[in-house]
Image (cartoon, rainbow, N blue to C red; front, side, top):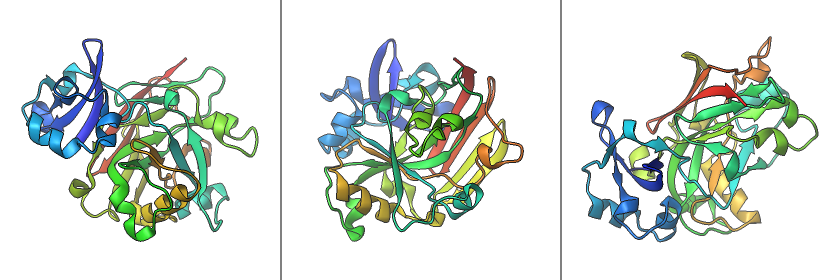
Length: 283
């Protein structure tokens, strides 16, 4: 199943993405159920029952709705830095015994097809194609063997980074939280449909040219490691997001650096889940 958040006729809702190509649409679960949003439906463990009840006949074509971040109101977004060997090598950082964790705020996110904003304060807007995993139930001190029991879905994510602000000090937070730099969507896919979780493929394209490509088995700290580590220091709750790190090939590591600017189109394809696409504006 592919679950998404969207807006239509000025109303925020959530639903089930169905069909492909010209037949692609969304079943409006928000209009048919008592849940305020996708996070609330996840918290109630209601997605399976909802899918059975609402059917597969779309209420809207995807072209007629505006995509919102897959989870619009997560309690926490935990991001993982330096989690692919190639990215460690190109940055000259990483290699510690534990994951590098920083936070992103929900207000800094945007949905599929929304504008990605290069702030006027910087020219150094960079892309980071990543896999996001979404927490399905409250979790604390989860064992590596049980990690998948707590995951409700996976989604494409672009951890857009304003590099000069990221490097102002040893902490990443400012450069990772400019408004509308964190792309999330177009939807999440439930684990049963993803298939082999070690073979999820990330491809980042800038104006159609491949910038990054890797598979999930190349992560230094895998999904199980990240779930166990993050749930050690805090309770994870339904709708929380763990963004699992970017492969090598980021713009900052190129010679000369490759920054995004107005009119650029950045795509994060996470196969088999879907493709997140945003166009850059300055603001």
